[in-house]
Image 1 (cartoon, rainbow, N blue to C red):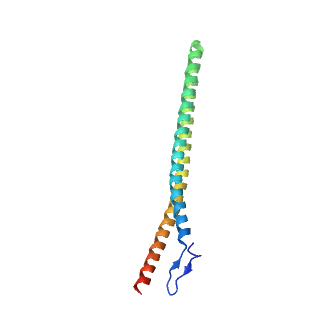
Image 2: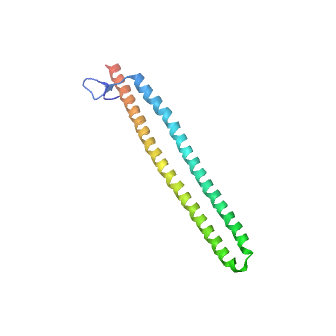
Image 3: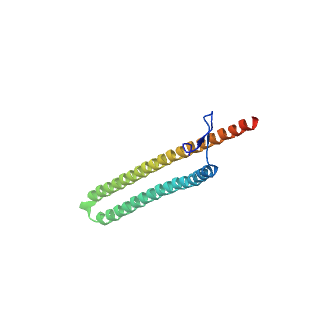
Length: 145
């Protein structure tokens, strides 16, 4: 937009189209809430993944308990049942931990991307403010002459 603006003679100022600038500001205003909603969706998705991991871990634990109870009836297999139950419990804990770590990494990646997008938007807003200030100063200089 600044490159297309007309140069003001004997200055570094440029005249830009007010409607185009207003549209840019409106697009930025709209994109910020969508970015915030995107981060909320990301956090909700992370919570959902964690809940699934916990539910799966609980299901595996219940299966382990059920299997252990069935095996306990035989004296020779009691030790094997305990070992198997412990193995299943350990696997479920590891699976839940892996899922939680994956969910955290995903959330960090998405939030990092969102932070970058917000920085770009903030820079655009700051640039727009500077342009408007420069334009305001230019009009003030014209009025004094």
